[in-house]
Length: 159
Image (cartoon, rainbow, N blue to C red; front, top):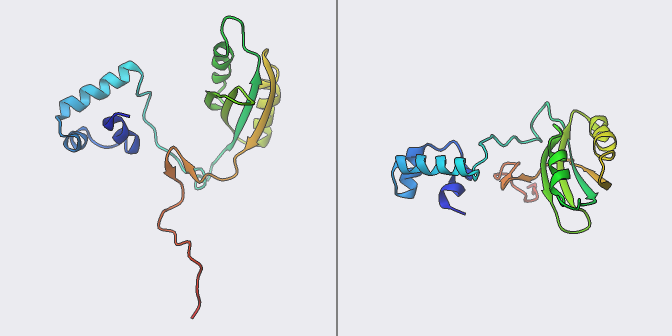
C-alpha cells in the first residue's frame, strides 16, 4: 500500500502540510495525489470510526452469510449489487468457502434485522440459504482496538 494511503487510513484528519512533511514532498503534491486517488476510485470517502461499545444509541449489528445461485451471464455481481442497495447493508463481500456472500448489516433491534433476513433477503431470487450471526461486542475494527491500550491485564495482588 502506498505510504500516503496508509497515513490517511491511520488518520484521515491529518493536514496536507503535515502529510507532505512526513513524506518529504510538497503540500501541492499531496493534494494532487489525494485528488487523483479520489478520481480513480481508490479513495471512496472519509469517515469517523465509532466505537459501538460506547455508542449509547447503538443499533443491532449482524454478520450474514448467504449461499446464492450465480446467474449465467452475471455470476454473483447482479445479485450482490441488488443486495448492496438495502439500507441495512453496511458492507458486502464475495467469499470463498461454504457461503458466497458475506454481509455486515445493522438494524434498530433484533426484530428489524430478523425481518430484513426473512423478508428482504430470503425472498430474493437466487438466494439459496443464509446464516445470521449477531455481533455482541467489538474488540477491533478496521485495525483499531476499541478498548484503550493502557488497560492493565495483570492480576491484582493485595498486600
